[in-house]
Amino acid sequence: MKKTLFTLGLTAALSVTQLLQAETLLGKNYVRGSLGVTLFGDDFLSDTYGEGFDFDVLTNVNLGQNLDLRLDFDYKWADADIAGGTSDLSQSSVGADLIYYTSPGEAVNPYLNAGLGVVYTDYTVKQAGLTFELDSTEASYNLGFGVEFETSDLSVTRAGFEYLTYDSVDIYNLIAMYGYSFSEKSLGAVRAEYDVESEDFEILLSYIFKM
Image (cartoon, rainbow, N blue to C red; front, side, top):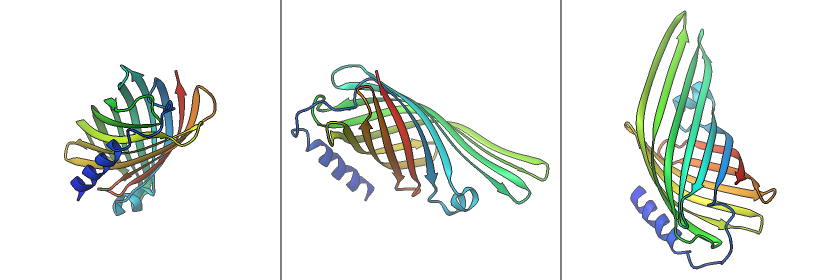
């Protein structure tokens, strides 16, 4: 089923390359900062922590007419008071992606991306004067595709799919973003991500500065 969804999504993304002719609002050099909240799909995480939080910083560098390099740092955390103690869960990651745009300069601009990174996860429980800690550092790999298109002279929308894996964890993210331009250099954006495997739902507010 997941392979079928992937194939259908890729076919749809690549089929729109001949539509409107205009400049897109992203796909150039920019810096993005985001804050967000995660609603856990897992019952244990949801019951224990309620929700998680996210902070990320991303830099996009144009390498050529069709190719960009994306560098990002992401930090997620959740904490809770448990019977006589505390529980803290955090995850930080750094990554680098190459993004290939099929139709730069057009209002509809499909893309493909691939990258690698490092993920550090830390789980700590403090209770009755004792501390239990479990941490790991793993290499990660990701592949994705999507489409970026203008929805008006001042706004841009992105929709896509990304598969990420590290250790024994597989993440299948559906991604959507809507950005509105405040000026020639800056945009505000709302981003949403849904992992079809864990059923985690994440929503983030972003500020984008174009260089």
